[in-house]
Amino acid sequence: MPINRNALVRYRVIDQCLRNRQRTWTLEDLIDACSDALYEYEGIDKGVSKRTIQADIEVMRSGKLGYEAPIVVSDRKFYTYSNKDFTITNIPLDAQDLAVLMEASALLKQFKGLSNSADLNVMISKLEDKIYIQRTQSALVIDFERNDDLTGLHWIETLRTYVVEKKCVMVTYKSFRAKEAATYPFSPYLLKEYRNRWFVLGTAQIRGTPLFMLALDRIEDLAAPLDETIPFIDNSEVDVTTYFKDVIGVTRSLKNVPTKVVFTINAENAPYLITKPMHSSQQIVESEGPDVMFSINVILNYELERELLGHGDSIEVLRPRILRKRIGEIATRAAKKYA
Image 1 (cartoon, one colour):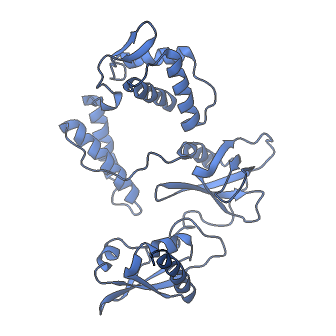
Image 2 (tube, helix red, strand yellow):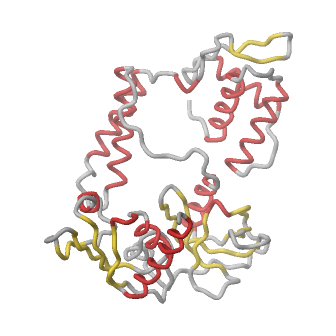
Image 3 (cartoon, one colour):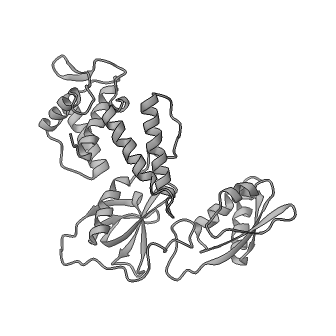
């Protein structure tokens, strides 16, 4: 039985409500909860109908999706689970579901040897871990990094569609430094993730720079332009597939050029950097003596500074002089706070 994402959101919200026994839930309460969730996660401001939630409850009660949820009504108006430990998130996959997952995993494995397949390998590991848990009913084997409190993730699918279809979007955006949000046409080219935070690269027509990066968690609204004559501005400036090749993080401009950054790390901490390079251009310059000297060719930006400072007193930046001075000033100000 094919189901869309909005229905899945409603099922999960209803499940969360009925598991919460600290309060009672009427049909109107469930309608409000589902409407709020769809607005928050999908940007849908149209309320959910009574008939829709009633149909959702019947689907959850049935075996169509394998839930067979024990939803009961008390006093003719309060919905709850007769089994207080029940949740649809613990429903095991049936044999057919497992067979489909195993087939998908086998198919994806064929691409693991390709270049730039690191993300695919992670996805395959997640899938195989899910299969293993379901088949053996054992505990979690792999715990991937995630942040369930991130905001703005519901914009990803909308922006992806605009990128693929090459359509302009009206974005309402408020940066951390802005006092008020601004609304303007935006032509998106690329979605970019960095450390569990998502960004979109594109052209903002009201700004002077040809390319601009927006953080999804600072977007307040996205909508199709009311004026259909507002064009999508094609990207003729850069190859987005290599735009971040020389960058740690997401901050750069067209004028930026890579700089050779040289630094040393004490022998105790060097193995961590050897096994997890700071950047793909990282090389060992010298390994004799108490410290190991590294070099990377990157654009100087805020994220690079944070990466270097994250190594504390185990690191010393040697070149370029402007970066060495910048790191030294930050470290000095930090030290004064603990003096």
